[in-house]
Length: 161
Image (cartoon, rainbow, N blue to C red):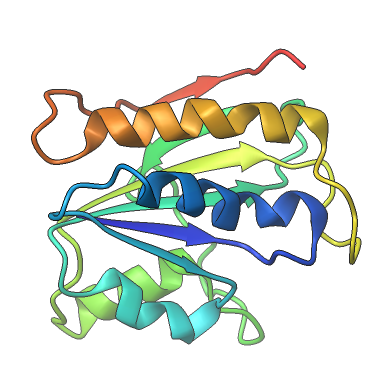
């Protein structure tokens, strides 16, 4: 199992991934690798390969839920737009490319995404509701570690905050 925490420490809510990774490393089993990176695009290719199970933690700005809402879904639950942008390659495009090329992509991919308020302000503070989601994410990941009976189910949770 690999836990891939995405985000940039300099951008307020986007620093969620690295904060979660720090906590998960303290209890991760030897069978679980915890990676934190600000990288995106094709740089993610190495992170989605050579693991049976991939759990991705990131922020999202959907505009359909309040900050702090947690989304849990599998990579097949959401589809990227046909034709993708030539200017930006995201996680879904990287996974699709790896599968198309026959590379050893993770068999199971689960994404834990937290609705963010602001991921663009350099030096910005993390929104309190986004910060409140951190212990919930940690519990979800802990319960899904190898040796645990828990499985991640597709769902949306709204955090009070």
